[in-house]
Image 1 (cartoon, helix red, strand yellow):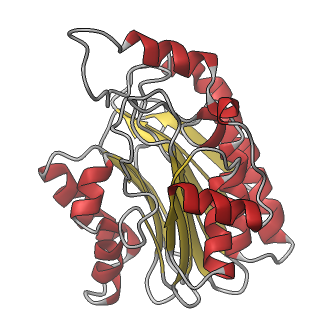
Image 2 (image 1 turned 90 degrees about the horizontal axis):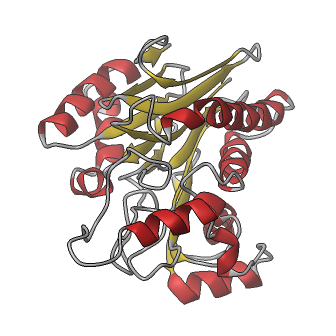
Length: 315
């Protein structure tokens, strides 16, 4: 039994706006890990655990998912999320939703209550409502901090797309969870608000099975954070699984290979992954990554920066 989570990676400094929120963010990670541990310890499924862990982080305005999502170029929140069950590689996802309180729960409804994998925009919102998901006003997602940062980017000479991770609202982080339950099944879930000032309709890697989210009991459950376009172009989630299943690499060794490839093409990423035999790894190629784990004994570890904590965690 093991649970790993992330809440964004980037080249952020400790004295930045985001860095100064480290204590509060680590508390948010701890609360999410405690939620998932309680489910797994009681014999719950890895799918239940990752869904509720990610929903917990979506409700936290400090993270770029759900309530803390960044704003698009038009000043709207457009959220993406996915879940995947390693037992049969069933998956569900939503993209470009703006009124679903917990997109990860909507993604699970797509998996369990429809014949489809991915629903987007108004159709996804209607399906979520009809499935009993909580629907809220779009204003619920627009925090004062995010609106202030988005406003600062408007006007002549301002960048069209902000992907810096240097401040509270400029982060391009994503939240995610992977878990191994007492029954030997793995699952993954990922949720994101995307990139600040993104073009309307932009969809990242998070809701794409085989890219930012993937789970298979033959290989691995994995969730990514970082520059989504690189993760999409390399089908990174499936590539990690292929290294494990077809080349026989361990989870940590496969992650070393994949991270080197992503780094070579300029990607800034963080990765969490766990295999059905219990091998797991957390790694990233940036100065910081909000990350955490809890083991079968309930031991919780959380970290944001490299100094004071080992960058790579593996078991």
